[in-house]
Image 1 (cartoon, one colour):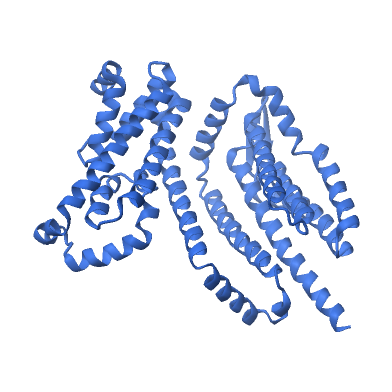
Image 2 (tube, helix red, strand yellow; image 1 turned 30 degrees about the vertical axis):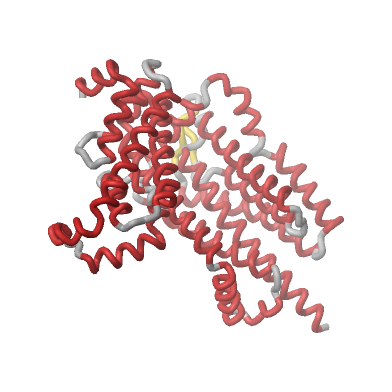
Length: 431
């Protein structure tokens, strides 16, 4: 690797461009390793971060463009002549082409994180005659995101990058797959919106007879149910990892990243962020929400009961979980902390802030305000979690567990609230 670093030091941005261009043409060149050392050089001040990203992006986009047009020119005659050697005949190509026309572009964004797959994707998209404009949108955006993320992590991690490379790449693959699935879900929802909603509504009506008159609340209940399923899945995965004691490397990487991004100059700000996860915020917020319910709520007693139940029940849930898991926490200021899994602060923040925002905005129709409040809640909860990691009073896995368990609690209670609200309204109509 000394040869690679020597060349990189001498030829800099030109070497970055050429090596990534050739790698995208499926030549056996270590593109990820090149970007790792480029990130290290950026960390050491030998290369400029922005120019490195521009050089790497130009190399990757040039490579995927060439591979596409090579595949496009070779096309079906090449597959007819040589496809049998890789078990790809004309019939298989036709089926794959149909599949690629429907879903292939969504995968272009994540293939860069999968070694071996990213090298052949451009050729295959050209062979299957995917429209170039459509190909370019996803391929270029995925390529630029890939190199930007790699180089930025290298810039932050510095000499630790080589140690954490495997773990970071693992989580980036998961992130890429999750992003692609989310994109696919959004695409399918937009394309088949009416059909999907009609099917879901029919299923809901058949499954629960009391929901015959839910109206607009149906979508809210379905969304909450989807969130519940997601958080429960994450919760089961967290519990499995906890039992397998599989958090150590994740905690090490995330802690290093937080401390690298937020240096000593953030100390005072982090103290302020930590207060967001305390009674200083929760007390006024709960009081404001209760006042809003009294003034604007339609089912005042029901909503007030649920507000206090969610807050009190969330505290009891957190206390019970921390006693159940009884996990030793970090050593802060020479003192061993205990029962930090899940994080009390992040579970409480997502529970109180999330449910309060739901009650405040449920009857508010202004989309811009709704989106602003939701983003503010997400940012607030993230800042609370980052402050816990920054001061080393909780592990990153504790923080994540707080978000997940809090998400399960809040989504479950939103569903129960809407069901009880509807049942009460139906009874009132009957009476």
